[in-house]
Image (cartoon, rainbow, N blue to C red; front, side, top):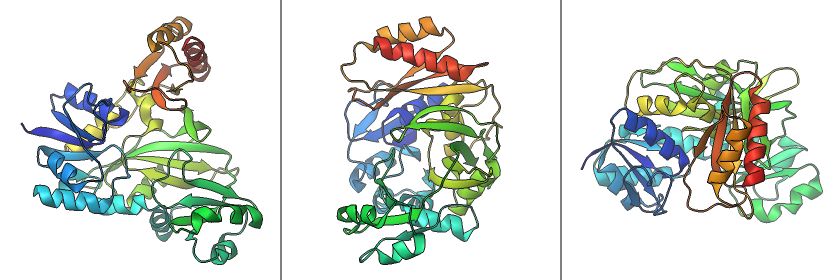
Length: 367
């Protein structure tokens, strides 16, 4: 059986992308280490290691196009897997070279700065760290160059003592130091660029982080699309990208980092009335015309796993009794762990932020 799109990863982003693809009659297949995943609930799936070139080849050999659910699959494993499958690398969106740049946070920073995209200065930490200290100065942010997300692989060093307290991490290599950004708030936008280089951008949203995990997303009232698009062009990207940004007190914007895939901060588009990030993603993967984004003001609130959680269906009832217009999206994950992204809710229209907060509070009280 031949599939239209193969997804490297079987989590909620693959699930919601597959739902968009299925509405267009497209057949999808996913690859994930887990046997019971959000994607496998709604479409065929392969259980296999995402870092294993043989598993990648098995997926690639059955699919016309390939898309990422996360950016952590080693670029060399993808290159080898596609070669084993005998398929061209341009079946994958984004390109492997773009992915390799994004995977290494230092290379990502260097790509921004080389093209004058505003971004914190960064340098690799090596030897005793003295060069990083001299160039970056305190306070600074220490980051693992590969694999970190939602605060994982990030530490802060405000003093020399604090810097050396993290030596057990950076002495092993693979860490960088970057300038601390005294931002006023965090912003995000979904950027899309087709294969001909035509670019567009979803609205700039404000994001609230709790314990380094995205908590709320709502309209920011500013437009950072020019900087966001420039950041994706800096890594020669095409496809859909989540762009995380900092807004400083003077209103200027700096790029935090990119994700070459649908993104948590774009989930509001499922209900805002215009094209969703997932519909746009499928169009880009299939090389179909894109749609100019336009919709109503919407707030997204993540639904995170809670200790001793009960039946989520009862919690959904409570949320909808509090806010009947809330739209609940549940990901179908097999296990609920505290802090894990289990779903989200969207509220559209006037006073959407406060209404979303109230709906989520009702959800948690019952759950």
